[in-house]
Image (cartoon, rainbow, N blue to C red; front, side, top):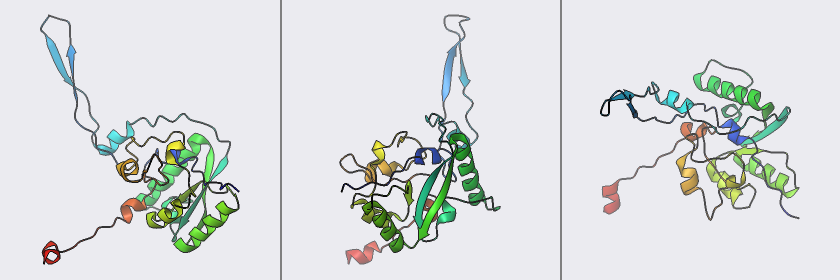
Length: 216
C-alpha cells in the first residue's frame, strides 16, 4: 500500500506573522527629476523603517487570503514543546504573547483553528508518526520536532516535499536560508526551518574545540 505522507497544509500562513525573528532592511535613495530645468534635479531620501522589525513588516507575504471554513490545523510535536507553537491565552511573557498573537491573527485571517494534538518524548512521537503513516492516516498536518529525530523520519519518506506545497517561498525573510541550501537534496526538502520554529533560536547549539590541542 502506498504510504500516505503527512501534509503541512497551512504552514505558509503560520509563518507570515513571526514571533521573534526579524530581517534587516538596507538604506535606499531615489533621484527625482523636477523638470524645472534640463539639469535641475532633487535627490530625495526614501523614508526607511526605524528598525529591522518595521522593515520586516513591509515584506509582502504573497499569499491570497482564503476561508478554510473553521477547519482544524493539527500539529504534532515532542518533548513537551506545545507552548512553543500553541497557547490558549497570553501569559505576560514577551515570546508567549507574540506566539499567541501571531496564531490568533493567522487563524482569523484564514478562518481555521490550530491545535497541538500530540506531544510526547522524541521516541514516542516517532512511533506515533510511523504508526499513522503506515495506517494511511492523514490526521496530522505538521510535525514540529527536533531536527535530528525529524531527519530519521524524513529518510523513511514520511513527509511531503516542501517545494510541492503551494505558497512556500524560501526567498522570504521568515525562512532560514539554510532550508534551501542545506536541507534540499535532488530537488527535495522534507524538512524546513522558519520563524514558526521558535526553538531554532532558543535551542541553538555550538561546538568548541582546542585547535592547538587538535594539531598536537
